Length: 368
Ligand SMILES: NC(=O)c1ccc[n+]([C@@H]2O[C@H](COP(=O)([O-])OP(=O)(O)OC[C@H]3O[C@@H](n4cnc5c(N)ncnc54)[C@H](O)[C@@H]3O)[C@@H](O)[C@H]2O)c1
Ligand SMILES: O=C(O)C(=O)C[C@@H](O)[C@H](O)[C@H](O)COP(=O)(O)O
Ligand SMILES: [Zn+2]
Image 1 (cartoon, rainbow, N blue to C red):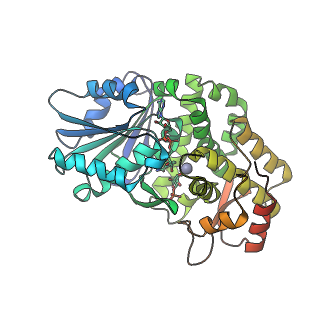
Image 2: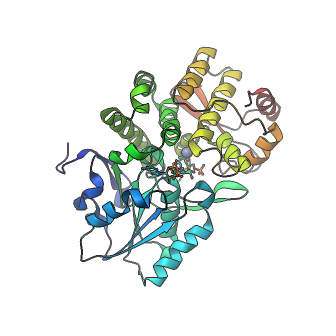
Image 3: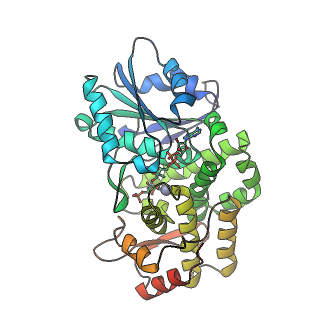
């Protein structure tokens, strides 16, 4: 326990002078002492969306001391709005308000808001401070940590962006009480990812606690968030800009991003596409003889137990997948690089899968 009431855990992302805390707990939106130390100056812009504003914007703004110059900006809701046009609206609002380099942006929302606000902060006047206040499970366990910011392009996910670390992350688990069940499941995809790539004990724990997680039992969900953030913080501290080990956080994403872009952003949630993508990666790993049939089945069962899809979309051919996957950011020259499982809890990046085997796997993969 730390000194601040309501904070159950504080983790640290260790990045030298860019290190920052992740506070996890209840009632944190109302705690000025967790926010104010990270403000660069008096000018603060809180950016959120139309769905979250009525739920949490007033509460967060009421926390900020009166002497600050606080502006708010409410963007449209949805993955289809994770675009450079919406980021441009943030820059417009900052300039219209006369905000300078000592301003601070606060991202109040899920991964879409967090990624866009982070990118707006990275580029505004060549870089200003920002704070992540994630309100979805997915953003609390993954997107608010690590400094990957950016927007989608019609041809590919997150194709435009920058690495730009927040000054602090404030995870108020009370916000999960209003989160729709489908979004909760989407967040569990990234939680399961950490177990699959790094930690078999966490996988065992997830199997035991899945019902409690789906019921948003506060202590269990706080544990899952803390364990997830710890794994991510360790990986980011080791490899901030994805020169090596950080690519493992992309398990399921090469397939998943292809699904999201092909289906039209927002039709498959990011976490749903990652769930299906991890199932495809586990199945390919088994086809390569790297993991056993039992471990492949165990991976898919865990994904399904979180109410996530393990099938591919019925309208996507192997050529549709491969065309999208060829644009993946992990690729080097013309070689496709995939995150696969050498064993459960141990992932690797491989460029050695023959194209014919990959195409064959996708052709034979269950569709719905
Ligand atoms: N930067 C990273 O490292 C990283 C990691 C993972 C995912 N991502 C990105 O994050 C995005 C997905 O994030 P997401 O799953 O949070 O989606 P999201 O931001 O679209 O939020 C999901 C939905 O929940 C609503 N919502 C948010 N908080 C709520 C609350 N407390 N109560 C009720 N409704 C609420 C949102 O308005 C939205 O409709 C994708 O764009 C993905 O690419 C980024
Ligand atoms: O933080 C990372 O690194 C990740 O890969 C986390 C992923 O869950 C996340 O979806 C990320 O945005 C994907 O990054 P990208 O570089 O593949 O677009
Ligand atoms: Zn992801």
